[in-house]
Image (cartoon, rainbow, N blue to C red; front, top):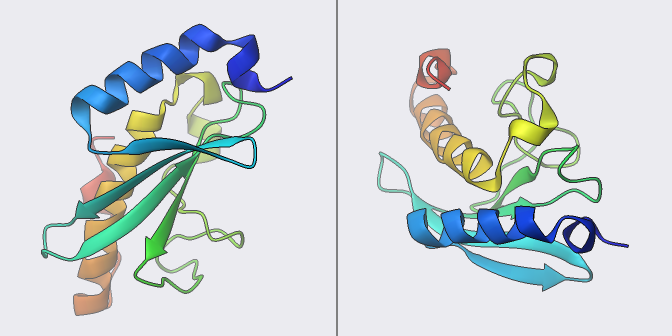
Length: 131
């Protein structure tokens, strides 16, 4: 049984919030729920992102991926080996408290930090201080 069949109210609430605050669209890809959205960072660069619910959601938080432009894996600018974005320190955040909207907003900040890194060669942790 899928997480959203076990916890339909969580999906209902997340959908309501995502539709109210983003332009993301929810799709079912081979049984996995994924939010897709084109975002524009502070440098006016467009990024296509995907927020993917994990099979054990809400106990495991969604993961964010940059679909376009291509972002090679690097620990310097915080990507995981599976291509997902490293958005927070796992030991400091409990999975059930992380919504798709939080992951989406952190991915937006990540996109600005990434563009800043491409321009300066430095990863700016200050962008994430208030998350």
